[in-house]
Length: 359
Image 1 (tube, helix red, strand yellow):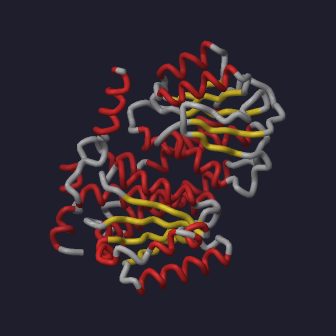
Image 2: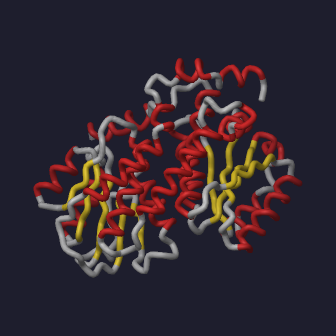
Image 3: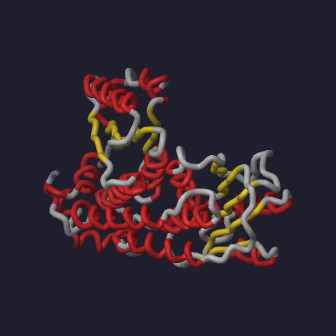
């Protein structure tokens, strides 16, 4: 890491750029997960146990990414199909046997509100999760289960609420096994990771996130992960680099990437020096997927492409998934700082919403 980059990543510079204290939210993320567990356990469900045949989550952006974690994490556990919908409309299969989670941090996301109204019209069982807004009004007016989460943070930073609360609720409904022990294990793993490898107080030589951010600075980032359980992690990291770092990145998953995108790493060769591939690795993936990642890494290196591997931490699956997500969040934060950008504002999202409201 160059001297100028070290200076930018100094704690004093972080505080100067980070006017909305994104760092504070990142450091408190394990605490948010603990609070989410409590909210889920204390939530009142306004319906009895039902025989659901499918589960759908509907939401956008930061309000949908928690649903992706739930879907990925429960890949081998849930006997009921889980679908994440990011649109105004909902699939034709949504009916009275469907459990629908409608997530909107603000409670005013127009796509989520449209999806809510259609799900209600079709007689689906709905659980609404937001910090207030029109979604809360609709849910309470229809006597539908509403779970409130704290206000005042960027939607993408409410990820702990939007992932852990649904897991606790699904366990409450008897649709999956009890999750509290796994969630507490994940919280402890996140605290250890934060204190030993991610916090700005961790020295540069031991800080994974700072080291990776420095390698991504002024480069185009390509993120690869295994599909099963970890596709969410690559989606999350790409989105966080976009919103926090204000930089473009792409993502794909194994083994699918080996059936198309691997062929594209031939041209344009003159750009490869400006690309960095980040591979998210986990000890529990299918051995053939792991082998595919090894071979792909070697192919890319032969093309002169820099490849960085980030390995999950923790014992349980939930801990390992969260660890990759948390590491990616810190990487995007430090990358924003290297670009001299306040990571919190998302001015183009706000502009787009304002323009939509006029039309």
